[in-house]
Length: 230
Image: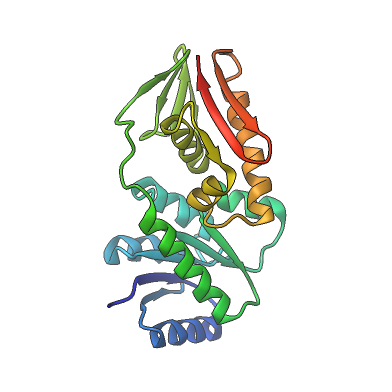
């Protein structure tokens, strides 16, 4: 069976050559770009199954490419391949819609394992959610397609990850959702860092809906969360 099409944007020639040859030897079809400004154009041209983006790129960084991709495709897996390891860099990456990070230096076996994991999770995700356009959440109007949460005409633009998390909570309202399921669906793995990042996003969503006491995101200790609309 033919393996996935991969868009790889990397400006280090030696590393790019190694990764390209290694992935192609495993049967992947790889499209390589070294210039950040060309990364998004290549994405539109080849319609890849997964994207691997360096962050520090000439003309346009990986964060900007990921943001552009997420404007047109909410589900294609994005992996950042980078030497940037500061927490704020990692958080920014997830906010732009990344599914995973691989820190440089890395082994090809690790990269391949993360690629396969991201593709497996993407293949198991439901393609369509039940929310079609705008839906009422108590005092709020939630539009998952525009990634907005509005109250009395005051519109808040949600990040990709905030939007996907709120959408998931709404779709499973009044049910207990396991933390591990959320992490695997939205972040690609249930690592310690991803778990702490989820805590941050839950806190953010609670702050966004605090004006309406009929809406609650309840923590079920040791298990997960339940979104309640009274």
